[in-house]
Length: 75
Image 1 (tube, rainbow, N blue to C red):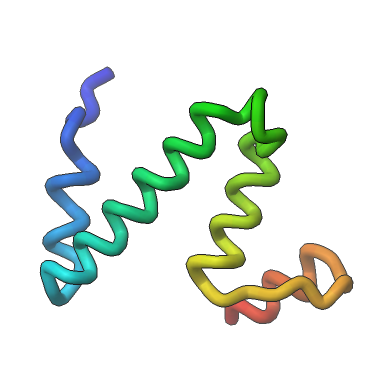
Image 2: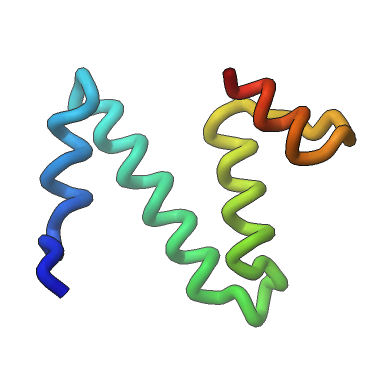
């Protein structure tokens, strides 16, 4: 691939306002990666883990009305 191997560590600091936020984002992705690495053991496959992580990170909650309602709540 011709993509930069350090893109995450290059662009995240540019896109946030403080070093504290950079650290929070980095730690969050480290946590998600550690959970994903043990997906067979903990039962959190990619779909379920990404959904839970997104809900936690962005304060989303399930209204039970499916994808369309969730998408509209992001607007």
